[in-house]
Image (cartoon, rainbow, N blue to C red; front, side, top):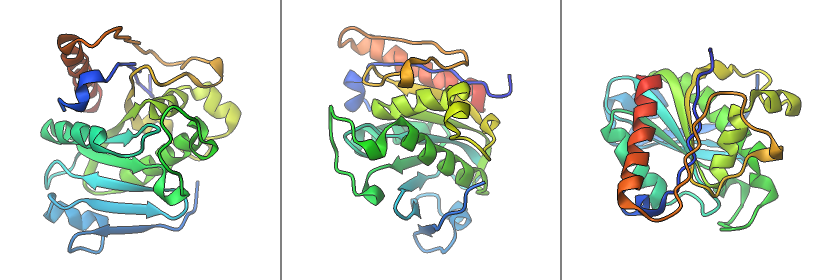
Amino acid sequence: MPFRSIIISLAFALSLVTGGMVWAESTSQGGGNTADAAGKNSSQPIIHTQPGRFSIEVQLAGPAPAPTVILSHGSGGLWKHQRNWAASLIEAGYNVAMIDHFTEKGVEPHVSKVYIRTVPEERVKDMLATASWVMAQQWHKGKLGVIGFSQGGSGVNLLANTRMLKNLKLAEGYDLSIFGALVSYYPGCGIPFGGTPDLPYVPIQLAKIDPEANKKSRERVFAHLDKHLK
């Protein structure tokens, strides 16, 4: 199957502590003036912005090209939860591209609410544009992973539903085969429009706070990424 993905719905509970389109854009990185200059200094984040839409903070696993995992935050915005995941992913050898869906759109964090400018369709647009940009960078190699948290997970569920993407005309001009591993993380995320992804997935629901179950869930996410991206 050209677009192999699996969607894992997980409760994040203790993970908080365990840690063709044309658009204007700008990219900055520490002491360099191009994104690819970052390969010389992987400790400095790369900031890429599509004005009025989203921004991306990229952290590299090292100077050599590596697979990249895109992170899509929930209704609380980009915060330490995603940064904790980023640190773990980098340690495992992945570049990380954290999307900020809110700031460029002028959206404030809105936990337990839905904002029209960040519904799943809008998140998918951001994810696809991010993916297209990442694929063009010299520091990336292979296919892409995407992890969506809560409302970001809703966006990932829609991204994996190729039939719905076609119906909504969201992915025209994009090659969906660049995605190798999709993860929809914890039960705050719904499946848009009542449909289900047409690709294989494994839903996991944790009914209670359980450190051991949470650990195993995180291990399963990394095993899935390693299988399909490395």
